[in-house]
Length: 117
Image (cartoon, rainbow, N blue to C red; front, side, top):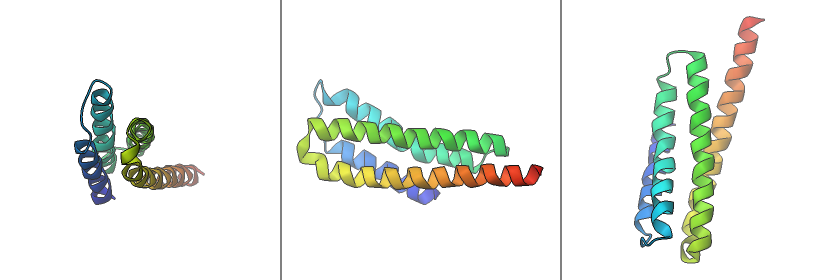
């Protein structure tokens, strides 16, 4: 999973490099690079968490960064229709990652409940 989130971050950076910066796109590029690369960084932190609570907290942040990346992809696709296909491809990966993180969170919570029963 760490490799997949790293590939996602790299793909976001490469996507951002295609965008000609101007007063409208500059903040969008900055935001998408931050959130898109943060997915992998936060997953790495979750993977090295010190406790189950810490793991879940960092995984929630990872999931949140995926959602934020989806938002910026929508904004960029609306401003730069010629990048819509690339944005859609990245959005699909962000959605898949979100589903995976949600499943991990759900399963971790269930395991936690089972442990205390």
